[in-house]
Length: 464
Image 1 (cartoon, rainbow, N blue to C red):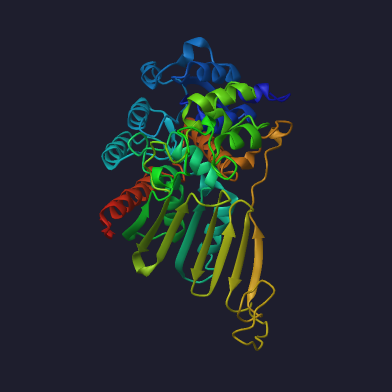
Image 2 (cartoon, rainbow, N blue to C red):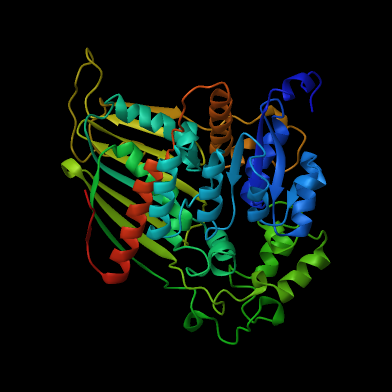
């Protein structure tokens, strides 16, 4: 704790955490370590003994407030101002409903619910208890998407007509999480679209600001299948694969060589034991050493969703494993201009079809191209905005960690908002979160409709 923060910490809001893994521990818990004057973790529920002990030690949680299950934590009554629910995807309803009944302010990791039946039950209980609930759609809290929202609402490009959102998952990230990792089977987690891209559906509906009327989706598991395996490929990369030098998914190259000096995710998902020997043993025996063509994965590796909104606005979401980058890009087309942007750089380009009032309109040839290869008039109005995240000074001196690593600053933005809402609520104010349950319900129902469309090969009409 920084000097002078001791007294401030006494007024900090208190949190309990269910699930001390990557999200509960490395994102939300880490925020509390960096900002103890704002929030303190006072209880944890985590089934993994080692992870629970490490988390409790970092946060100074006494033994009597360390629980192996979320049921035990909730049975102890209300222990704090807020409850962070970052349990596995299929374990949402119990902690959320139980926490709402106890009067916790809730921060719920996405996806909010794994299926429509649980979504219905959770929404009903939250309405009944009038609980403060925020859903961790962290992209809204980035300066990048907040800037896009402001530009759209200001009418910078006129009336929004079309939106294209692309999520480049990255070949290595997809192989890690959706072929070898915890999200590789829809029955054990959720469909890939819901697990990875409900963020994107939330952003699309937020930017458009209209009701979605129709959903259509296509996609499949195309590449990570047994018939695509190189000749002679064994069950595991460590068993002498003849394609080791040419396969981009060869596990030892990623986890032992390229990430040799890395001690955060994705390495900690493979093993939390330090050293090359421990990593190699984990690859030999665990899921992350499997050949990507011989795993038991069944989620799609590429998918496109087309959304029709009231008033004829169209939006598309494309997500795919087969990209070198791991980022999001967006393009918004309006009646009077267009906007394009890239999340990892924070750069946003705005082009309006007419210059600002008072500027002279010159002549042009429709096939002329500028230095960027764009055809069209040179006297339109174009400018670039840098809406990238600002790093937290409290991360200085912590190798490999930046606040901006957490969804381009969105993780910290979400936590700041949640903690402030808890503080105001403790003082008696009536508050709600910007990423409310109503918003999550809307985007999740679109995700469920997209999966029905993909499986059944038809357009799904959304209920009014």
